[in-house]
Image (cartoon, rainbow, N blue to C red; front, side):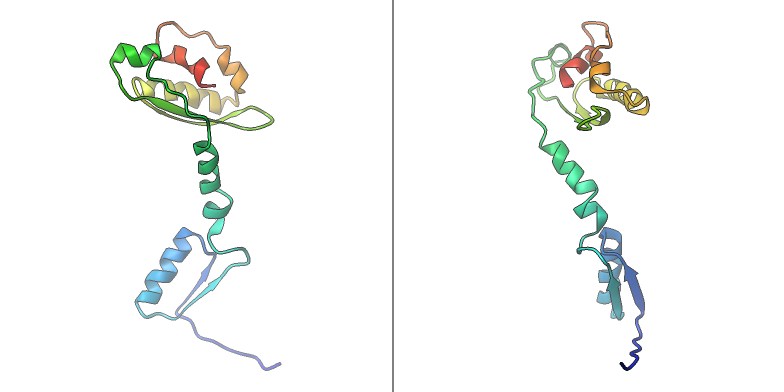
Length: 140
């Protein structure tokens, strides 16, 4: 078989968002670009990492939290949350919050995540009532 040599201005390894952006920008600038990837087009984030995780979180049950004490007390008309819990181990992996005192409550989730707490363990923590933290048990 005859040996082939090709010249490229840029060889991109992978087809993730960063690699694709670089490849397309250089190609549009007139460069000769080669893209190499042993996996399907899209990269880890789009196919196996970030986006599938976001879809898992988005598929969580939506609960109306507007009637909770913290929302009513603050006169909030909109509040909500999503908590990502690992199947099997029940470890808390992440949380998204908006509404009154979200910054305060997210710190409790951060400590729980850092400590590797399971949802049942955090659910049993006694928080002062009525406070925003007392809503945590209803989020799990």
